[in-house]
Image (tube, rainbow, N blue to C red):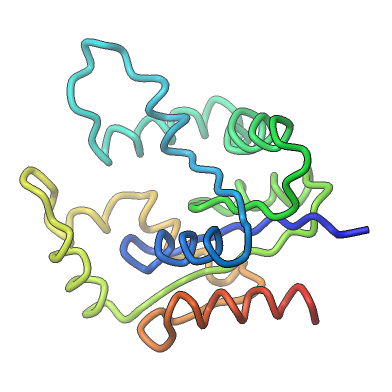
Length: 181
C-alpha cells in the first residue's frame, strides 16, 4: 500500500514556492491545492480588481473566524475528497504556524512541511522582475503581517531550502528523498 503524502510549502514572497510546486506537479505527480482560488471565489461582481492585499486581508478575516482552520476545512479537505485516488498533494502556501498545526492534527496523510528562503537581495531582484503597475514596493509588500508570518515558518519546518543555492528540480528531488528515507 502506498502512503499518501501531503506537502506544505511556506516561504517568503518570491522564494520559489510556485516554481517548486510546478516541478513537483510535472515530475512527481503532486496535485496542487491553492488557497487563492478559494479566496477569489468570495469575490462579489462589484468588487473590482482583486489585489494581493485584498486576498491577504480576506485570508486574515477567515483566520480569525475559523482559528486558522479554513485552509484545511474549506480548501484542502474538499479538494482531497473530490480526488480520492490522488496520492501526493501539495499546499502551495501555508502562512501561519496555526495552519500547519491544523494540517498535522487533521491529516491522515504523511505530512511534510518545507520552507523556502533566499537572501533578501535575491528576493528583491525577483520581486522587481515580476512587478506590475500598481504593485506595492518590495519593502511595503514584505511588511504585511502575512509575509512576516510566512518568513518565520522556517523554524517549524521539517526541512528548509535556500532557493538561491539549488534549483527547483534539485529541491524537489531532495523532498522526494525525505519521504523515501
